[in-house]
Image (tube, rainbow, N blue to C red; front, side, top):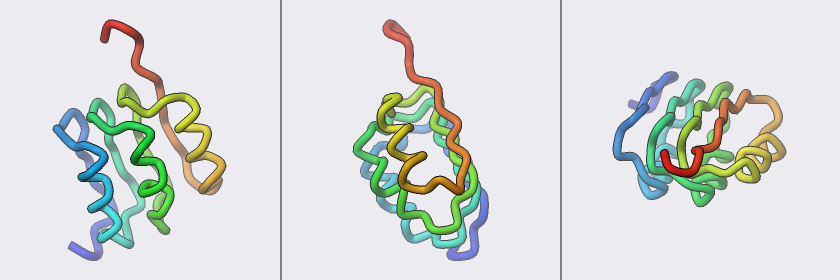
Length: 88
């Protein structure tokens, strides 16, 4: 699916290892990873998606610092992030 533009993996079992595989989708513009098991380890791979315009990483293991790093790496896309609250 090299021309895929939108992908929703919300509340799936995606991990940092799976995010690395998304680099094979060069035209991806909208990515939803809400509620997945990804962490800050995914930040470098997410920052390498050249056409990405919106990224949803709410309620994942990505920290506020990781989300800030994403904003700095690729300022032209919107990162929707809300950190997990302890006990969730």
